[in-house]
Image (cartoon, rainbow over all chains, first blue to last red; front, side, top):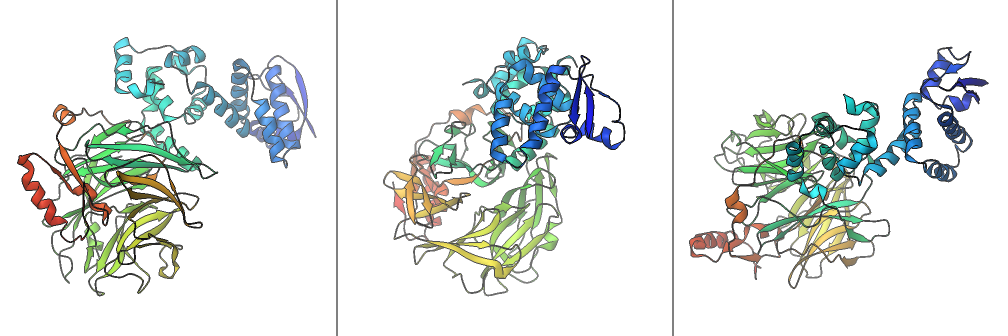
Length: 147
Length: 428
């Protein structure tokens, strides 16, 4: 059985139900009988949705081949930062556990070695510490700032 | 909150939980909300649950002593799948910032998940080498007329670390003797609390060795004790950190002699006994395969020491044993394979005192507690200390310390008396 998903930029994707229900969000819509018409996904653009559906499809196809699946996942997650964040937000919105875990791990690995300043830049965070307050934390934990 | 606008809160949490401790501490500086998130008790607790459940790594943390320099150090070691042991980069010769004021270093109560409980006299401290933070516990309220036993463990049901203090008021060898009073310190509560643990203290039971490092596993602490109602035979006395009740676990009948030295330990999550048969220079390792079933005590393996002096420290996940062996120049760490009986010198953590090892899990415990300043006099004290190592009862090493200065001559005589019962004392 096929479902129709509509991305934020109004592109329609026709997907098999088995593939689409990898998303817990879509799965509950199907179970509640709300999936007869096109399912709008206003939080996911077509570029990201295409990638997400590729993930889902391969997880159905390669379900029994662990090694092949791992190889696919490793390659899949090697994307640039902007795409990674879009995937992360999409996986969260669509509630796709394994994609979310993988994306979170990838982001964590990226953030691991960074300085607080780099984190703020990457994630668009305002520094609301005064220089003295920030210095106090650094002083107490000098070892964490050494490389 | 402005800064969390970009990432949904629970996604941010998922990412933070996957970061190593060093990064988490650094990222406290990112913003005020990140700082309060990372230092919140909820985050600290869930972080521990996550790392514990994902922990399939074979990491141990070793505490070793440089008696001459009055320094206690901590190092992470790791054994990979090819049985190569390496010392991990993360904690390199970490020194406890606090110095003991009387002895060379603190006495060890025990550890859990890499969090250490140390004491001297009535002063008890908890030390987390992972985030390099310590706290001093407030004074307990119960006084002991005889002596006290301390134990330290982790209660996974409440995600809480607890220090147990058992204060004896009478000689419990005899029928009708007053049971000890039991006080428990909980890290979550931040205070001591007198319990009714003494009510369940079994009659005619005394602790075997003093001091003793009680093994902690599965939410309880385990002491080796003597049953005076049964010809002074060895028995295991447990104290459950959850229901705060004492229980007894019998040992296999007729397997232990009164000259044996027995220590409780953990072997792959099971209660284990490390038995040193002094007359035969053999270690025998017993494991309780089914908890509470006396018949399930199994002699896992023996180590024939061939007249050498070893101390068994900890079991790796792959059945190898981490041991400390006396070599010229100090006590060295070795890895022993019971199957092949091969020993491998690890080449690090040379110690002039007894070492100790525990399973290690990265954790943030104590991060939310106020910082303590190291008192200046203690950190700057430089005394000349000579050390004495005893390799027959290696566990006593830490107590046999004296200073060359005349003011401490008294200490020398006292310590010598303590070691009278031991036939072999090596002077360095």
